[in-house]
Amino acid sequence: MHSPGRSTSNLRVAVAAFWGVHAACLLAFYTGVTWSAFLVCVTLYWLCMFGITAGYHRYFAHRSFKTGRVFQFVLALLGTLSVQKGVLWWAANHRVHHRFSDQEGDVHSPVQRGLWWSHVGWILVEDHEATLVDRIPDMAGYPELRWLNEHFLVPPVAMAVALLLTGGLTWLVWGFFVCITLVWHSTFAINSIAHTFGSRRYATADQSRNNFWLALLTMGEGWHNNHHRYMSSVRQGFFWWEIDASYYVLVALSWLGVVWDLRQPPRHVIAGESRDTDARAA
Image 1 (cartoon, rainbow, N blue to C red):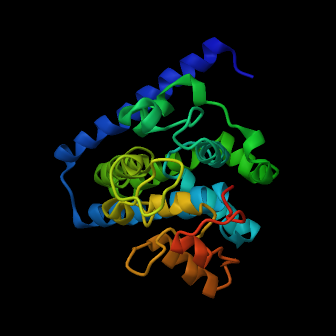
Image 2 (cartoon, rainbow, N blue to C red):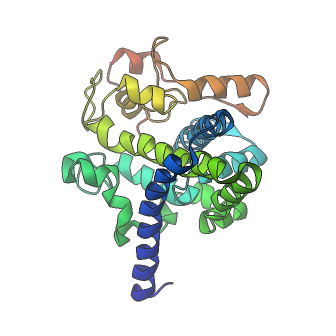
């Protein structure tokens, strides 16, 4: 266990690194952009986003589908590339969010503490540094996930080095600094904007909202009111016109046998009917 002094010191380094990544995006004015750098940025953006949405969120936090141990690790690895800390840390905190959504105890509620706190403030304080293992015992038993959770910086640093060696400073700036910053704020917006701006199809106990633009940016996560209506669903776009790219990829992977048992929302849930048997827990 870290001493308080060491924990505070580590947090200061982490906060400095967080803002350092943002500042490094300004190097784009020096490097300019090439077509290859742009394509690398876009490709890695969607790859990292899928790791967060399908991996960290729908699989690890909510167990909305099943897969084998190898692809389970692949999902954790892809999510780790986005530099949003370890898979167990992320999923455990998300389960806490659903347990107390927009109530006292929610780690990132804009209703309780405002937009800035819910968007980024909560990750820049010492209070939420520890991994809440008791919230995710189903996944904490895998040693490879525990290792990845503890050494979550190894994959993104390796990716950054590979980008630098392959495409020089331009690839590093666009494929890492710009890409990761965009992934950060797109996913952070689900905590903040998707609990503040948008439409509410279902009268959930929180302020979750559906937001079309966020759904496009986050491969379907913007259908947040749908998600809070039935959080264990593998798809968050309940209707055909609600674009949910993560779900489409997962369906394709199910055809290949990589994932299976994709959990769907019951008809009465989509219709908005209330029943005692609704699956509300992660």
